[in-house]
Length: 271
Image (tube, rainbow, N blue to C red):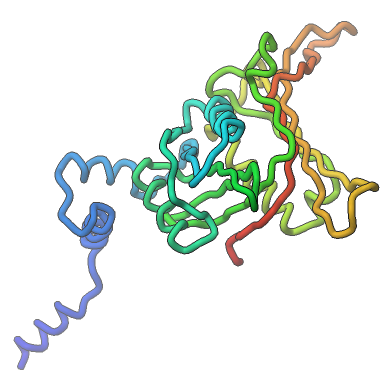
């Protein structure tokens, strides 16, 4: 009886931390025991880290994607570089469906990305851009944006551009960003998407561009229509203060990409 009691206690014990990790790796590798090389990769990139690095973004096309929306993805890759990966093929994914979210969770896990942007174009939702993020390899937030006007980086040829890997300064203009709960969550999502590497200190010369998001009510808009959000990107060049001060004065030049869009649908995590 003592032996059977000890055996039952052993089998009823909670799994150890090592057993939980092995089960997690087996789940991510399709139910099979992963190879040594795959196991090392998953341990390095999938397990929780004490200090989180930059969040990479997976950029992909939907069922149908126009050339204009393809330019949007290419410019997002240029703005997010080197923390962005662009997939060239079209994907049968509808982000707000359960099957589509499972596909996004699989692709973001496979490519080690916690952010994603899916561009599509159809008759019902033209020029559609869905951005979102994941937590613990599960979809956390999604925001569907309808693009009304877009000015790409190629349209601003000859203008100075940001350096690769530089962090943006972000400015949100309008009362709706802090009064409306939906736009407050959207603001947090946009900051998370563009923030880059977390750092303790910033060299002033590294602040080379600023992103401005402005929302305002249009007095001529129809009743019930959603407000338009204006995204503008400027190259910031620091010059000597003409008044003789030690702090340099920033001069802003439009550099793109510029975008006018409105929010179509959102699906944010419940608190």
